[in-house]
Image 1 (cartoon, rainbow, N blue to C red):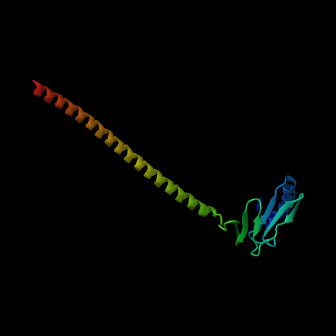
Image 2 (image 1 turned 90 degrees about the horizontal axis):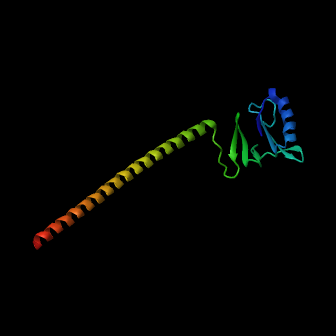
Image 3 (image 1 turned 120 degrees about the vertical axis):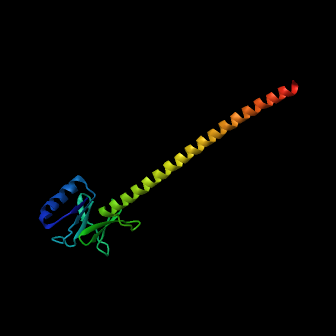
Length: 155
């Protein structure tokens, strides 16, 4: 559980902490984006034997979430989530929108290309069928003409 908090919600946050502990929420993180009342601004607690114990801060002030595999980092007034294994930050919402738009554009281009390929296959199959029919007709005509020639030669 991650709570973005402020001085005006501090009493509420403390009450929630007790409720979360009773509910068995494994981790509880508080982030004070404006530094109004929490010091440090990012704090975390891990449930052990029914009580929350402070999550130790990394050298840079970040916290590791065992339940999510994420590193929580304060970046100015924002909380950055980072994949603790790869070190890759999760995108911000506005970045995510751009990634989604790019993925949708790629998917549309790929769908258009698949449609073109399918149309080209359909045209090629039609041509192949027409050629096969033409060969069949030509072979029938050739057989008919050979029969006629044979009849003329006999007769």
